[in-house]
Image (cartoon, rainbow, N blue to C red; front, side, top):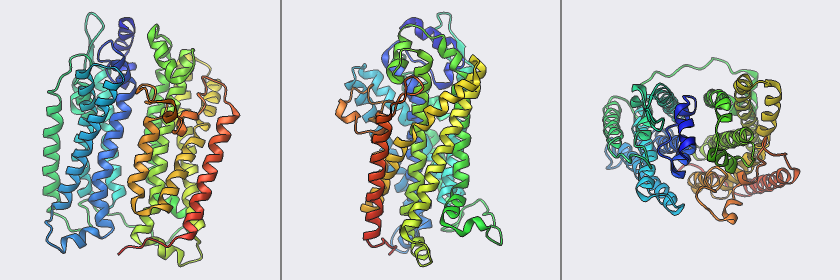
Length: 491
């Protein structure tokens, strides 16, 4: 694999995705997947901390807890401990999975730790943003902005790095050392197997946690340190319907996701020319993921699959607002008007579908524009990528409908089960499942396994109809369960 390693190392555009850490299958796997895994680890930590701090204050649980023999900082400490423990479990599972897949033990352990280090650092980031914003949505948004900045710093540091004389190693420039994502990459699994960069994440998390403790002592319960904006004195006509209300609540979140996918689409599209120059086993590597012997088609298919899974995460976060509305007591007030249960559920379903379609098309457009400029033929590439984007929607819808069933059938456990299901579908899907040597029957349980590998292959009608029928059946089951059960009201 050494010739392929040189091609990736010498290409600044390819280094945006990360560093190739050794001429091994594990090194190539990390180059492809480490960035996605790091982002997932960071978001896991952010959501865990925000849910048990800021969201607990929104729901009134924090005020009830503090009425007892619970200290001011107990909830914050508990949330941080839970997030740190989750990252340790993640590191162990990733390392074990790579060992089972036949990779060296030392490199596999370092690989798991490098991903977990990003989640550890963003545990501290979320602890701070939970004190700054007065809403869970705002705290998550601030943490997501910090995550985007971390990616940009790591990418810039890798692109500006220097290559050794053998073209086998990149020494990253200083911006990478300002980013938690960069710290994880500098551990260089399957090559140097360095532990000491982990020493940057742990002190940084400690400092951030100390800052969050200081900030928590300077604010009231339910309030953030950043001033709250006043709303308009009168509602617009669009807010007179449940669909308009949900759209207004999700507007900022959708915009943030759109900006992120736009940026990734521009970068991945610009890499098309560099991907075209890869040779040897790198071709087989992308083809195994994208499902086509043509390297560019396989690359575009694999990137579209990654975007589809990212959009699915957005859909899950939106649909979980159904449980939030019910648990917080807002749903009871809404249903006290002329709004029925199914109309309330339909408002979220419509916004999820429209938002998912918009996001996946934003990514396809950005990738098509920069890819077309690099290769020529922008119009034809856009047409192919639009088709590849739209075939992701049935799988996204199937996962979303399954989440609705969990919310309506098991409201108390729906949040944890929904995220567990999301993680399973991603890891059992085409992005990670084959690399982990998972059995075929387990891979088939993920809806993303059945998505056609467009534009690498022709789109078959069978998989689309199968996913669409599954989505419809799950949606009907969710609606039936919602109509038949009592509401779960706050105590």
